[in-house]
Image 1 (cartoon, one colour):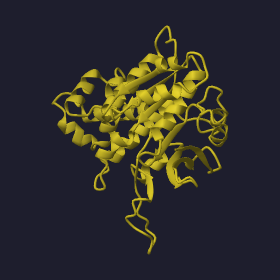
Image 2: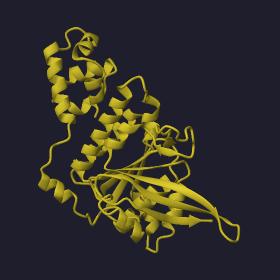
Image 3: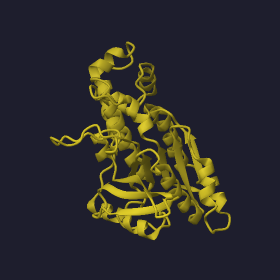
Image 4: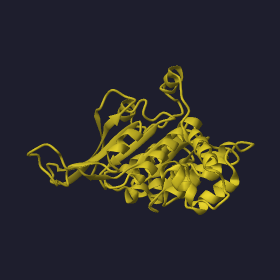
Length: 325
């Protein structure tokens, strides 16, 4: 959350001075150093040390996700008729509870496993059958597959299916601050009067690894703090506005710690962004590809989706998403 969004809860003059010192978000203020360290960087007369401490406490309160009773959580776990479905009954049965609103879902897998295509199909299926819904797609790499989106929509046996693209909003954001700005604009849009014709029901970030991979370091916790703060804000955003959020992640090689196990094997993969990211989402879907030859010696590629980790379902099966020749 940008500090500018906290005005007038904290003084605009203090926000301006903090921004000039490079402190622009709640994460910068809360995790970039002690209150004394930040106070020494501010221009003389901006505020008192106690005033800065009080401002940090207010920002921490604004940035915190609201508490929920067990009754509310039970209601949130009920199926949502307006949720996101793939249109593939076996897969939708497996994902029951994962694709409802207010969920934060990670979709990970190796390069070429079909992560973006899978989420794109999920989103387009929702837009085709829910004509009053809209989805925000945050493109962090500049590679949004517009042509692929049109190809998928041509497969739907529905009139005006191609018009679903009019309700898919694509925003390019290559840095964390840029994504915050996109989310703040979306937050303001929810308060518009009269409300927009189409209600935002989902957010996709493709890819989350492009935002945080460059700032993570094994010798510094600052990057991990920024990532954690962002994901907490994203979860609060999803719960406050009843949104389904999908973050597409890359994969990295996995080196087992078991003595005698194979090491440095590039075929053993796991989701990127480290072990801490595992606990920042409600579930992780893992996509993989398997190539084999049929009796005709024609090579086929099978796409497999597996529930890698989940807080909202008790089964972990896999589903053969399809075979491509």
